[in-house]
Structures are given as C-alpha cells and as structure tokens.
Amino acid sequence: MLSYRHAFHAGNHADVLKHFVLVRLLRHLALKDKPFAVIDTHAGAGAYGLDAGYATRNAEHEAGIGRLWTRTDLPPALADYVDLVRGMNAAGKLTFYPGSPYLAAKLLRPQDRLRLFEMHPTDVELLGKTFQDDGRRVIVTRGDGFAGLKSLLPPPSRRGLVLIDPSYEDKADYPRVVEALKDSLKRFPTGIYAIWYPHLARTEARRLPERLRAIHGVAWLDASLSVRKPATAEPGMTGSGMFIVNPPWTLAATLRECLPELKSILALDSGSSFHIEASPEQSQ
Ligand SMILES: C[S@@+](CC[C@H](N)C(=O)[O-])C[C@H]1O[C@@H](n2cnc3c(N)ncnc32)[C@H](O)[C@@H]1O
Image (cartoon, rainbow, N blue to C red; front, side, top):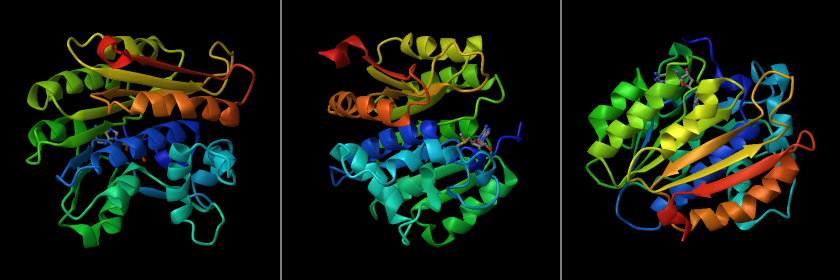
C-alpha cells in the first residue's frame, strides 16, 4: 500500500514527539566512542520542504514544529531538537523539516552506520540522492523494512538503534510491528528499539501498546502525547506514542520534564494530555 506520503504530515505533532525522542536516543548512543548502527525500517523521503507541494495542503507543521520554532524558553532537551531543525533553515524561516534519516545522519559520527529502508519509489529516490555522497556511512535500500531488518541484526558494532515507523495505513502493520520486535529481540536483545504508534479510534491501534508491553522480559518506556480529546467525533489521529525498548536510564526523567511542555504548546483543545509509563525495572 503506497498511497501514504509522509510529506503531507511533515513536522506535525506526531513528528515532533517522534523526532524529539529519536534525537535523545541518538545523543545517548553518541556518548561513547564505540560505533553504533541505526536502522530506520520506514524512512520516508529524508527531509521535506514545507512551503511547496504536499506539505502545504494541510500545513500540519503549523500546529507542530511551527509552535516550537520561535520559543526560547524550552527545556534543554527540547531546545536541542528544535536547534537541529533550525540548523537546516539557514534563512531563519521555517522552510524545511527533517525526517528521521536526516536527524540520524546529522548525529552520526564517522564510525557509525545508517541503514534506511523505504518502499515508495519517489521517496526512495529522494533518499538515494540525499545520501549519494555518504555511501560509506549510509545505505539506502528500496524494499520492505520489516524483511530487511532480519538480515541486519545484530549489527557488527553490537550497539544500535532500530526505528520502526510505519504509516499503519495497512492494518497488517500492527501485527507486523509486534512480530518484528519479538524477532529482533531474539537476534539483538541489547538493541534500543523505538516504535512509533498513532492514537486512533481503531481497535488495532488502541491495542498495539498493550501488545508491545506484553512481550516478556523486556525493559520498556512508553511515552505518548494527545493534542486533543480522544473521544472526539472528528476522525483522524488525536495523538501518538513512542514505545522504547531498552531505553537509556535518563530518558524517563527527560520525558517527564519535556512532555508537560509539549502538551501545553501543542494542545488543540482542552483534552490534550501526556502519559509516561515504564516497565517495572525501569520505573525504580
Ligand atoms: C511514517 S512514514 C516514515 C517517516 C520517517 N520515519 C520520518 O520520521 O521521517 C512511513 C514510510 O514507510 C514507507 N513504507 C510503507 N511500508 C513500508 C515497508 N514495508 N517497508 C519500508 N517502507 C515502507 C512509506 O512509503 C512511508 O514513506
């Protein structure tokens, strides 16, 4: 199913949560000199122009990164993410927004590696062009990220992050995510895994966090942000979450500091909320 184009949604509230957490995970991995690998199973186009094409259709970024863009009073971890977005907007006007591949590539050191999977022919071509000069560190593959992941774990460096960020337009993505995580943990139990999920009324979406938490013997942190009331008659996504396996031990405290800020800055109505929950060994 290839009707989904991430450019429609670039920089919206869900991207803000996902990319803020992604930056924290990458910063954590870069604390040690030892190389690490990043595998992005659903990479998208890599970066997006906000003033042309699909991104202008609903201008979702205006209620997302647009609300953080001019703030000078953000907690340091949120400011770090916003500064990375500012770094790709040299003119000081919000014109470009990074995708997960751009952010990962930005924080990679020469010794680290990035593997990107994307199925959409246009987006994979854009990715290929963006990273054509970085062939030693970044490999772009056109194909199914769930299948590709199997062959890459564990990474030679034995340190790494897997981002699993499907569009969930195909409801088979829900069980695939759970199976991919279970299988990956057998191959690479010490890896960090970040799974993005949407808050939608559909049963599969509501059940996904429960199904992820039920995977036995795993340390996890589940952080979600709703920008409007969950039970609204309006269709569509009311928020989203990031389910992190093997989270850095400092991440929960950072999220506790930053998610209240995001909740108030990104609220679309009085029903905005955030939730942070950890597996028992993480909450101590
Ligand atoms: C939510 S977007 C990814 C956004 C990106 N991770 C980011 O944060 O910037 C999901 C992408 O997955 C692609 N896709 C869908 N099914 C896929 C699959 N099985 N393997 C790889 N890519 C897939 C879609 O074309 C879409 O570009």
